[in-house]
Image (cartoon, rainbow, N blue to C red; front, side, top):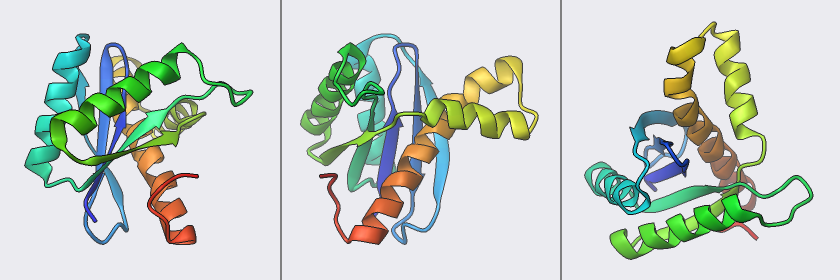
Length: 144
């Protein structure tokens, strides 16, 4: 199944995809857009152009597992994507992905403005890799 993941942010939104084999998640792009609805339109257009069958949206729960303002905004974004694309959207716990992405980029010696411009796409890759591992290990396409 062709799956797209989204690391939604107020200014930058990272996008990653995997091919039908679900073997490898790859960064696609970072959308630089502050307007909620316009960002959703851009992600929906990418989903259409990529032939996406499922969208996974990062869901930033608080460390104590509660749902805060940021997670609510991501849930609203996922719902808007569902409406705009007609595709199933899944919320996926993304706690720690940005920190991991920064760690990977530090290891690759990507710093400064260059890192700022790609960290969200790398975080989207991590979200998608985690979701793909879940699918592989459980045979399920939804997060319980």
